[in-house]
Amino acid sequence: TRVGVVTFSGDLDPGYPDAFTRVPLTGAFVKVRRGLREVLDAGPHGMTLRSGIHVATIELLGTASAYSQPREDARKIIIFLTDGKPTLPHEGRPAGNTRAAIGGAKKAARARIRIDTYAIGEKALREPIVAELSKQTKRDFGNGIMHRHCGVGHMAKEEDATAPTIVRCLL
Image 1 (cartoon, rainbow, N blue to C red):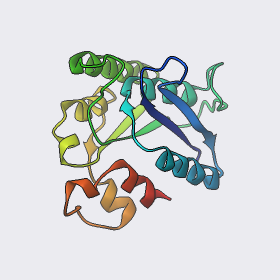
Image 2 (cartoon, rainbow, N blue to C red):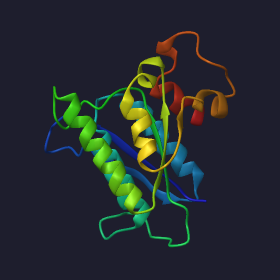
Image 3 (cartoon, rainbow, N blue to C red):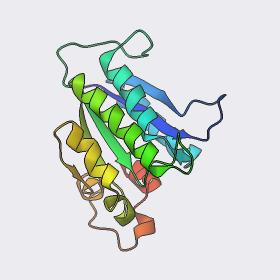
Image 4 (cartoon, rainbow, N blue to C red):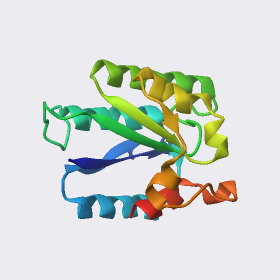
């Protein structure tokens, strides 16, 4: 089993990528934990779901621009954690951002990549994009990540169910 970490948050700054490979696919889980810790330390920014799916797809396929080596016999799965709706690359145009993210999911599906999407928090569950990303690759979505990976039940307050909380529990 190999796992990688792709960060997808941006700010429309052309000098800073909206998504990048923080940890290439590896069996060294200490590297993955370190990468997750770096995500937590960096904090939230604008959300570029399309860019995140694109970079994860590149890594899973092991294309020429990937940091990861391809493994033809591997099942290719993106575990997509999101705590909100896409805000970029089309600032102020949520419908355009949603179409862009769904387009990325369709490309992943054509490459036989599965996307398992986890909504973090009640607001994220109400966003149609969360279910739609998984639907494009014939998968379900859920918000059970807190229960399955942290050993805790539903959070009492929505602000407790955030991406930083999830990253902390994965460490």
